[in-house]
Image (cartoon, rainbow, N blue to C red; front, top):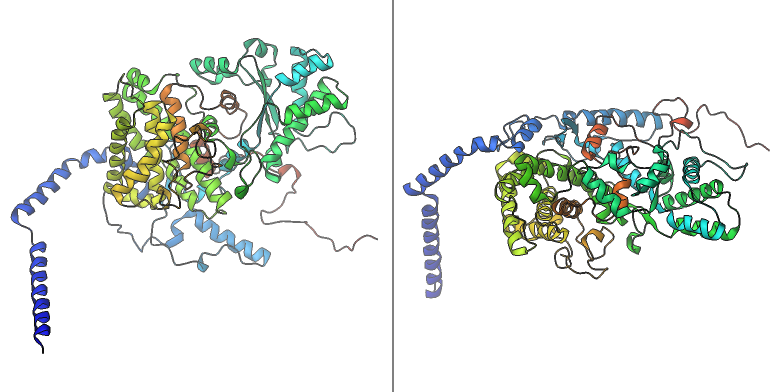
Length: 635
């Protein structure tokens, strides 16, 4: 052995010995270190009672039927797989019956990967005292979620001022309360595809279109006094007096008609059909009510109702995601916030002033309305757009949306912040200064991270990074918007929380936290170039420069809705849209979205658009022609 080999061998032995000594040293704690750990443990025990007093503790205990702070799942491998779920057992039985009847295999849990070690958690919906299974929140299983989608897609709002002016100037017709009432009565008939101008026209069974109607929206008490009460939306009755006065002032003397196209029509076609249906039936109602004829008049009416001062709920989308108007992907974020009606019975007072007057209870009340409202945005963005339109219904985005439906996480964090806000921020408005807001957002992010780390059951309930990111961004953007009254600051706070603060705390956030192809949310936030940024209320899923993931949709809605509450406004983007979705005749409850979705999970929600009126009395598995008779083609 050469001298170099001996030196190398000696070096290796010395290094190995040194490493062993270091490992022994690292593995042994000094008495001082042991005392420190014990002292830390004793200190943590003092806060256990505080943690048990939180809403999230009670919610986790209700869900898991176990100690929420315990880190070990004693029932692991003993939960029974899918059999722990009543709904999945029903699915298995239904799948067998379908397979036997049609002769083709159907739902069969045996063909998938072996699963079942984890608990299939029940889901408490908001604070409504309703518990459903996770499968009940899937949009295909939940009639209320389907109706939410339908009620938006089938809504078109048209301004009648231009049409009335044309009648008066070009045709010499007079618009009076009598003619307006006749027009509205005729419109109820035509909206259900009733014929008015020709005899030999196919018409639709009224039972199929019982959800088709139209109502007037106006800010003029004089105009409303001249209308039959069933023909207009009663702003004064539906909104707090402060909000009603602001909405009526903004709308003014203009007359708008909100038209509800039959649910069945948009289900058979798409959202674009709503605009065409509404324009055609509105034109026919005008022709009949005002006894019009002549191509020049009819063409001008058609133009007015198809293009001039028409509000569609959604715009057309860019080519790679091309869909027509009134589809979810084209809805501006500001409209989504205006769909929400949770705050309409509350006084129109800025958040900071409101908590000064009402204290902790008032602060929690307003935060509760925020949490209730933005759950609807999570369903629209995560479940229907990303999970259905874009991904084909894989089901994962449904579970992400349930993080907004589940009572506990949002309310717990927002409630804790409300208590601190009512104590320390009374009468002290927060400037739209990022250096100030950043301090508060860092505190909130830290609080949320610590909550997940303290409650293993919560981390298991929100098992994906997208769940946690969604909660983090929603809370941060909502708080930022409410404190400053600025949607830009709110969205800034949300993007910062998930792209920086959360990533710094947990090192990564998953694909939902901006670990995606492009980090566009924050740098383009303040750009006013239409293809890059624009006003936050005009953002939407249709923007090419956006961060797209399951963690961003309800974050944007939270910023807009929270900013409206923060500055004490009556609407976000459009006072007309705000009033349109206060209509009590809508099947979906836009004031209590989680309640409606929860009731649907219990099979206690009746949707529109059903075809019962034209169906035979048959078994649920029957389909196609019943009692087939063997007949050849008639010659």
